[in-house]
Amino acid sequence: MPEADLPNRKRVLFLHPNFPAQFKHLASAAAASGHDARFLCQTHYGRTLPGVQRLTLKGECGHDHLNALGGDQVQRSTALAKQYRQGLINLQSSGWTPDVVISHSGWGCGLHVREVWPDCRHIAYLEWWFDPESAFFAYDPDNHDLNLNRQTATKLWLRNQSLALELVSADAMVAPTLWQARQLPTVLRERCHVIHDGVDLERFNPDPTLRQPGQPILTYGTRGMEPMRAFPQFIAGLLPALESNPDLKVEIAGEDQANYGGRLPQGHESWGQWAKHQLSESGLSDRVKWVGYLSIEKYVHWLQASHCHVYLTHPFVASWSLLEALACQCPLVVSDVEPVRELCEATKSPVAYVDHRDPAALPKAIASVLSGQRQSSAQAASQRFKTYHRRTILEQWSHVAGLKLTTQY
Image (cartoon, rainbow, N blue to C red):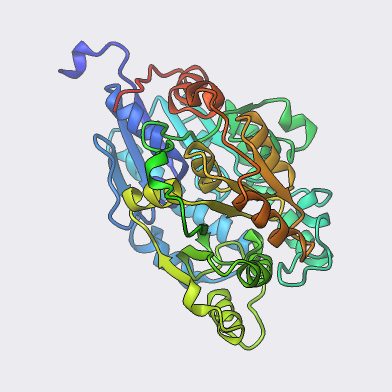
């Protein structure tokens, strides 16, 4: 359809260092709705979205140049903001002006939006505000692997500088959960809309035929293997769980990397390497399979087939994988922390909560779940997950961004 025949067609620009990240559903819907959707990024790893024009910053504005500059996170945010400013000016010079800009505010990429385009509608997406009084710092002060202490709290607090300027200059801000919104100072929290990134319930849903009786399979999987996701505590609890249940098999997904900092285990180059050493020393390696990165189809089937899925985390941003496991109605063992409770209780999902700081808690919870004491609710998933359904979040974004958005794409 010609652009002249689209009276509601708008020019929409997404800003995030990585494509498509939290804007996957939103950018896809914008393009499918007929809007001119463009996405300015630094890295994309070959990913594409139908109808979304991916624009990659390169050269002095690129990711490699940013890494070469070095510096701490505050300095990197300042440098990245300057890179994105140049990218915005280049777009402006080409004659393209957005009606709506949606930026991830945590890295500085939207810091200069108001300067370059004072008349556009700017929505800043908030992932995390570093509040020194948050449970993020106070929950587990004796856990030295996390490297969270008064010194790091001061450094992380300074990361809020560019974030604050972007948030106060934006027309609106959005956080994906109440927990994340509550980290904000009151003056900002009162302006914050809570809209989750969304889960695709057409893809993530239960399939009872895949969860076969017989030998139980325990699964664990997040993006990386690291202290922020309590991976060391998972391995510590897994050893007695394997010893007490000789039929139990374990599958661990994800990449052997730390995405959220922390210290490496003494004598090992990674937490995955450390875990394999622990399992080998205990003679249990043959019952643990490392499945690595899974394609989306294999990942869904992997969750659907699990007899017990373990999701542990320090009080931080809850992973997409938690909501995806809930949508697949996995029997779940989860950390008893506020960001996890928010999702589990909102979806009325029966889970076994554990204090992962207690070494004895995890094997007990695993045994309880494997014994079948917790059954998935029969309530319709469309109602249980309404808050997080792709259709709901797009309706909410439509209102905040002033865009007509379809849920069919």
